[in-house]
Image (cartoon, rainbow, N blue to C red):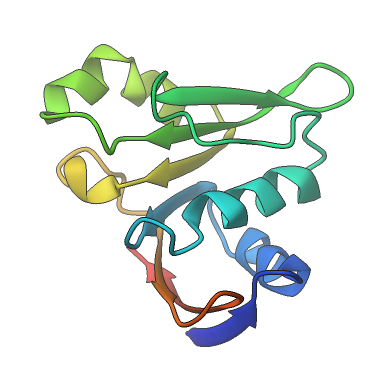
Length: 137
């Protein structure tokens, strides 16, 4: 499915993505295309207590709801140089956790991605408009 949306009002696209079957979301797109912004919106929609931010330096962020329960993990693999680095983080354990998984730069770990992921491709159109295309991985 292909949609154009305004990043200042992303609630509709966030709700559509979260209604898709599955909990693993793979975000593809150039720097500045809106990957982190969209993930922030999804975390908020799920009741996350943290506003969300890119885990570029830590590689993974954990998000919890108001009850302290883990709702999701946000990975940013931009800086990794091998799939082994992702395995060393315990990626397989995160996948089996039952929590939502949000992955930026999934092209860095193509052989590790479960087949039931939702591939989300973002494209910068202008300062407020993005093009999104998504399908089952």
